[in-house]
Length: 131
Image (tube, rainbow, N blue to C red; front, side, top):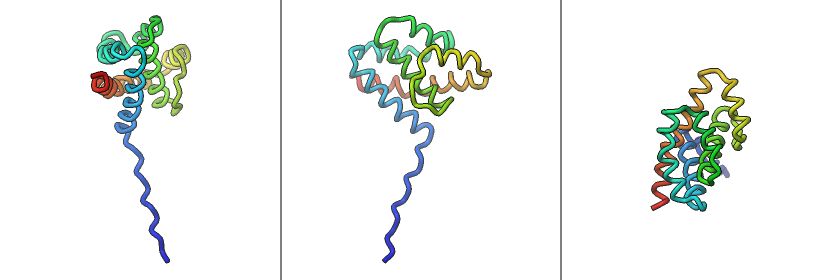
């Protein structure tokens, strides 16, 4: 008797991976004590990155002693680490800053682009969940 083997699920596209990660992050951010503040910060983050740069924005978030800043910064660092190094873990601010400062311009641009692309999903999901 010949049994059919189950079809392999195709690997999710990068955009699907981004959206899945953003969904989980938005759920964490919105259900935390920061809630609405996290949503507002996620909405404002792309403009802050475009105006000041990725590393400066992450440094600003790191300097704040507020949950929403720490959470969003951690979410961005984790995604950047996954995309640049394949490691699905928040490396912390200093290790990521050192890596980005020592990287070539193409890698720094990729990190910035990935942060902005993640935020496109994250800000929409956070707004939808926060209602």
